[in-house]
Length: 248
Image 1 (cartoon, helix red, strand yellow):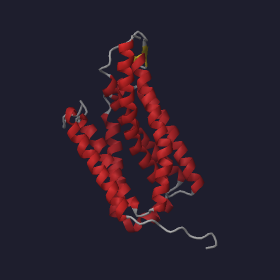
Image 2: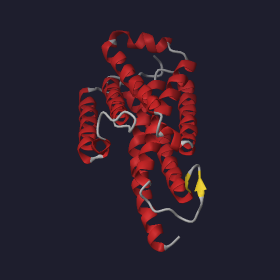
Image 3: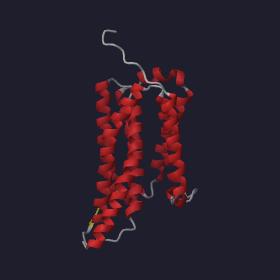
Image 4: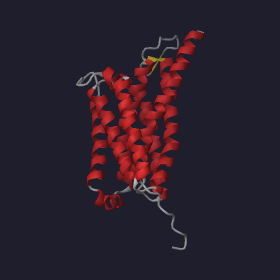
């Protein structure tokens, strides 16, 4: 490729890695909340399985991206599910612990898989929207798109998976140290569900909301401002639990 083309692709790749990092932070938080109630060993397994599924779904989504442009229902289900589990937690706080203890490992993995599918679609659609305007290259086609564009999206997806791998464990640790922070975390999960819902409503097949608005600066400023306010408010309102001594 020519130098100017390499620079153009390189700049978009940097932006995409940053974007995928932000999108993957949502995925990691949901993964941490869903697996937090499990015993430590099962928790690690659930996170690893969630990471593997996130990888499979993201790579698979790249290959079937032309089909995904027409399937808005999957993203709608993912949005509804995240909003549902958020409201369920917030409206039934007194029964939350009992419900979590009764939730099986397999059920948790199934819920993680559903969330991963929704996040994979959101992530890849955002990546394609970013690279679609890049000029074609002589590399040929991979997965129904220009080879260079495919590689850029693939690298962005891998960067996002790295964020999920490290962020999920970090979020679990924070939620364990500050159990009351989970309410704020569930508010964030619901707010992420609203974001997926906005993307669904902006889908060309639905077109209730303008796609330019959802992808534009106003909505993104609103989304990240609310996300930051919930996170900061939750942090200061939550208390750190004292570690029990080993003898007790």
